[in-house]
Amino acid sequence: MDTKEYIASGILESYVMGTASEQEQREVHCLSSIYPEIKEELNRIQQTLEDYVQSIAVSPPAGTKEAIMAKIKGVPQEKVLKKVEEQPKVEKVTKVVQMPTYAKLSLVASIAIVIGVSAMFVMKSQENEKLSNEVLALTSQNEQKQNEYLASLESLEKEVAETKALQEFVLNPGTEEVVLGGTETHPEAKVRVYWHKETQAVIVKNDALPTPTEGKQYQLWALADGVPVDLGVLDKDFAITPTRKIGVSELQTFAITLEDEGGKPTPDLTQLYVIGNVKG
Image (cartoon, rainbow, N blue to C red):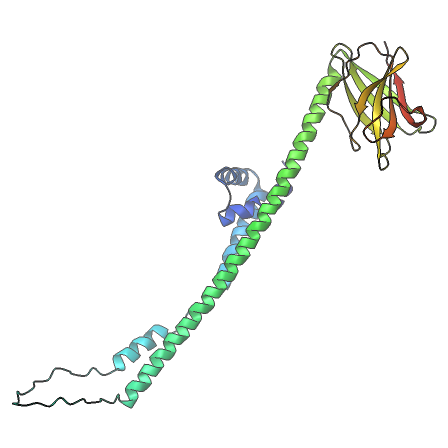
């Protein structure tokens, strides 16, 4: 297993952030117990996140709680229950009680402390929001890396499947390898055709065909009793074609020409690139 590629995929970061799926969590747990380098990277990511959270933590100033309690205890409590003698007629009098100066100062100090604590709370909330945004950005990057990793994996799986199919087809006792060599105008060109006469199937392997020019495409032909038979066009960037049925069992030659994109019903022999005869 390529541990460097696995570490670079971003799965470990997703595991630490808690965004990994259950399958990915089990995978990380298993692989980290097998590969020391994966375990070491996992520990490093966890420690980095813990260090970052600790670095932005805000603690209230020392003695804040004691100062608030002292201010509360310093405010005098007025006795409001007084015995009132009954009078035959009592006129209602509104009395304005002035707050002592020291009480005002105590109240102002208390309000200042509350404002200070509120300001620290706002700062902490902003820092938490910043951290949350950074975590979301990191998660998005991890998802992008995972998508790229999955795309690469799918491409690799396709390549492996094509190679396996080629091996099985080539190793079949009924398969013949026909080497198509370059012509005088294109001596460097080379292609191999694997032909199974009984199933009338072929696979074409591109060894050294030049990249076709714009608007052009390679076309595969068979010669049966001197008559060219169209076997279809080839993808411009092909390396190995999938198995294709050609519907011809009695033939003597395979050839490839460069034609207009989409192919033609008859070959342009002036654009013949490779040709090769079957053994039979």
